[in-house]
Image (cartoon, rainbow, N blue to C red; front, side, top):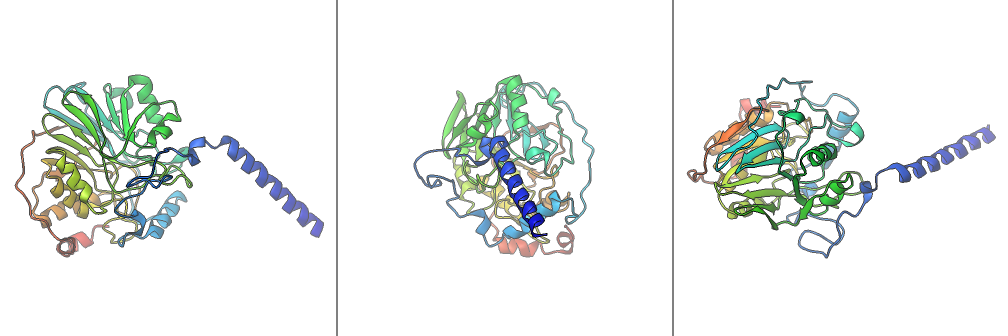
Length: 391
């Protein structure tokens, strides 16, 4: 019996050695790589990036364990919170091939993927046509098909990649875009290394850096409050960011993925010039019942304050209704957004739009200033039977 047990133990150790050796040979090198090398700075310690206003996983309103437990249940196909639809119908309308002059047309493709057309340019944010948001075909599945079929997508000139999470950096989509269109791909520090692992070049810039696309049109990499990782061991090896696209008719702001942090990043964006359109995340903020934000994801409660600080003429809520990434019910983000706007008495220029339907955005004009509302006062205003019923 002891001899047989020894054989089993020895055999098990041998298999572990074989698996470990194969893993070293087969696992892509970028799963634990140094994506960026440079001197330490205000948000880089020489090895990893960090939020200068604090780590999103140690903020008072976040329970990191709740997030981990949610993801574990999701990946093991156990029931997680309120029901979501398995599939929703999308009725896309083909976007124009080009939009000239100051006219601005946007089409929400789903999640954080938006086609922005103006000044003869086609700009795509965080393009994701994958069916699952995760590595090796594992992860939350897409419940809403892309609002534009890839083969109906007009030629893309500029791609903005906010960070390296799988629901924002889909390498298979980037490979197809590069092979077809050779767009300018702009991202933040370190992400060019990940994108380059599949043979696609990208321009990587630090927060505050500006890249001119052509006279009068530029891209500024903007600070937001988030984190990055493709795997377990490469946390914050690459930087996360939003983007300001400076345009003659008023700027475009794409927030990417962000928590509230100190919210001064929204003030900084406003200083780059008037914001004609802001694409602001409103989903994946609840990892346990009643939660109103996660450290790395704002919900509608904080999104309306971002909108106020930006002074944007129009905002569209994104990062919801495509992949199930958190606890809240499918329709909760837009309903809670409407309630938060009513409480803060902000103009209803911040809303959501159907997937796949092009939207004409009005020219920039300043909105009447709205007085700030203390977050605790906003939560008291939202403490109603209707809002409490939103799961």
